[in-house]
Image (cartoon, rainbow, N blue to C red; front, side, top):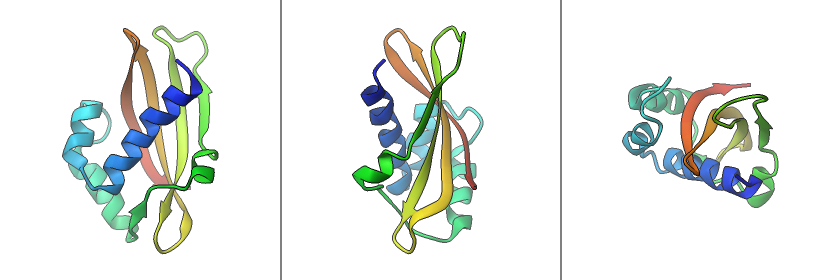
Length: 113
């Protein structure tokens, strides 16, 4: 998998969050670690309106390959952006797993740094 593939998959997750499509996100992740209700609560409790990060915001994404993992996996952390703040202190943490040349997503956490 290329870095562009990892960024694209992460952007898909961000799009679902911004569009408040929590049920679709739960389907994408299999509900592993966070259910649609937990996702909705995390976003709602933050009290601001998420937006898609600008291109430079996606450059702030921290992508680290997990060593000696089989299948290959990456830990990804990216800050959210909001209408009210621009770059937010809320972050998205996920794990991307390469399986049969497809990236699977596990949503690890949504929290304030």
